[in-house]
Amino acid sequence: MTYHEERAKRKLGLLPKMEFKKQPKPLKKKSDKRLAEEAAAKVELGEDETLKEKWFKNRRKEMIGTCQCGCGMPSSKKDDANFISSICHIFPQRLFPSVQYHRLNWVERKFWATNGTSACHSQMDNKSMDLWVNFADWDDIQEKVHQLIPLLSETERKTKFFRHLEELIYQ
Image 1: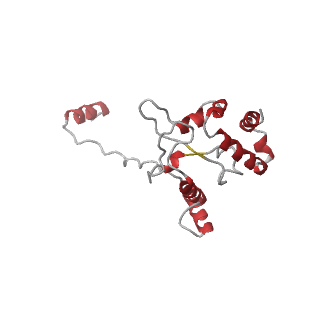
Image 2 (image 1 turned 90 degrees about the vertical axis):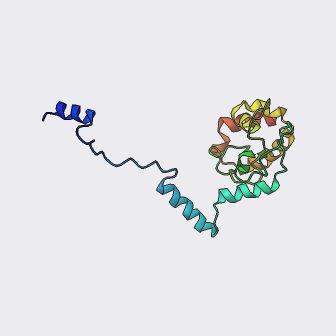
Image 3 (image 1 turned 90 degrees about the horizontal axis):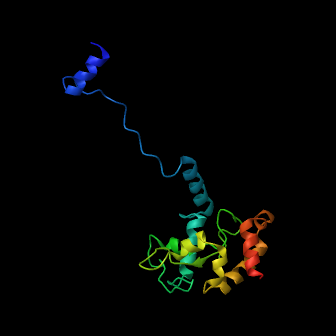
């Protein structure tokens, strides 16, 4: 029997279907290397949580439950699964590792967009930094930045983000 004849018979149901390889396993959400790093960090701290988890839990204690940009909308402080979303870093974590877990490097923002209002956290992260001066907590942000600047490394001070923020603060 030729390939084409066999294929036609399988299509008509005269021959059983061919068996295929196993179904592929779904991709892991975290790599083995990442899981090992997190486990090592937990062992190093001697606790059940990483430094990042600990930092977010401590910031939650300082939250007041209202977005501080001036909109007056509630933040996610009381939402156990999503409270982290309302903690907005002033200096982005990936660009400023020296202050990413500093107790002053954050402000409280509403994360979820609701009818007629936008997500303040996303606006702070994604829109122009020039808009920060319009926030109700701009004075608080300035004060925190003044205290964090001495902790930054030289390479962090050379970033475009830092130079722009410095211009806004020292206008």
